[in-house]
Length: 115
Length: 114
Image (cartoon, rainbow over all chains, first blue to last red; front, side, top):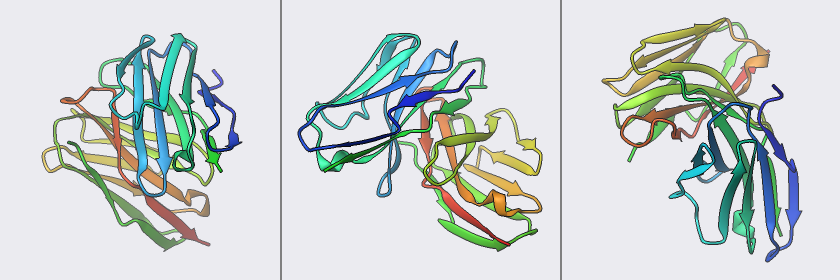
């Protein structure tokens, strides 16, 4: 498997624009996570899905953020409208629950810059 | 709320030395603990996963230990090499807050001096 695939790798957008980040999890994994990484706050969990269903979105900072998982092989994180403080690296991760061995695998991330 | 702390924030050691990275967590009711490596501008690479019932895991020159009752884990790196330079993060998933959710520490930035 090619691992968790995220696109785009880099995104520069103007304040107020809509941004859509994409993720393809590892085939067969039943959990998908969206994280955000900043220098100030480190890695924060935004939302996660189990079998395409959102389980916990308590980490989503504002209503401007939304995430979907229409099928087992694709998820999106959308920010509308974007603001400069949204600038961060956004990571997608997936895992397969098998007893206690829920090892998480991360994508390469999308570096978002909002100007 | 689970909090994960890694000390020190940065560490520089000469090549060839053995070293220990520390991770502590406030809620001992964890499901497992995972150590990751992150290279600059890259994603996270899983190094070792320790289930809550285990005391340690080994992979090559890496050994991770877990003392759940005291809320501590260590990552031991033997015979360090310049290629080990990276940021190391530990993360725990909690039995009381979703087995799958990971709470991350802030990381230790390791530099191996040739």
